[in-house]
Image (cartoon, rainbow, N blue to C red):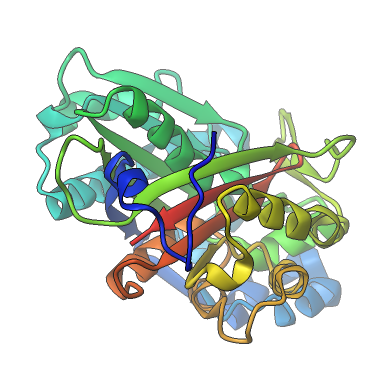
Length: 360
């Protein structure tokens, strides 16, 4: 049975029983490129068609895993994946240590760690390789997630919430790392590859969440909802082979958002006696300009409602699973008034969406 919220605020009892997002940190590689420089680096294979996508991407600059000149020398999937593991471990370690420090939580206090990526492969997984380096306990539970893509930041927060409601005295951590630029295919002249090359950047994020029996600050996770849309498997994903990760990206992404997302959000909120007008802050993944426009349109949002989303896209590019966590970090740094509600929204391969209702 759903608890009904009134006046755009959550009932005190529901807030008290909800886990908290205690800290979020985002770490970037050292190398930053403006969109003009990225266009120049990729011009040898992309040509003027790529420049058209790059100019309309909403991206001004991005952090990238390697010096721009190194990308032309990558020998193939094996070399790119070896580089992925090295840099992903470095960024993940920095992000986790930063988030734990913000949360005033020792690594030995973490009971479960979730990890997510969709831009590289590692077995043992990243969080296993980091366990000893970070000082996690030997009995820590691990849950690596692969294949969720852009939705994984929100889905990871939702799954931490599920766990902490079952174990309310425990601590959970999530690390998301995406080195999207290592997947760019220099022989693929498809529209999907041009869009990806013009849009995606690299980063890692970490989230620390605590169960309701532990007293920590930060927004409460009040409710979540997952949605998987029928017959949309080809909208977004990877073709994985000896060439590495070749993007599959349909022009239907914004169309799917327009078709389903408004109704999904309204039904989700209505279950708690709410409407979009009750949401004070929107934590939305920046899929790209058309997707952001579609979200604004279907939810009838005011012009500045997704300002942080557009800023993240402009300054960092689309960071896949990390992006919505970057928007969450910015929101927590400048939070809405106490008692306010927020909604985290992300979409990704499946095709699917994840909604997370937050309470300050």
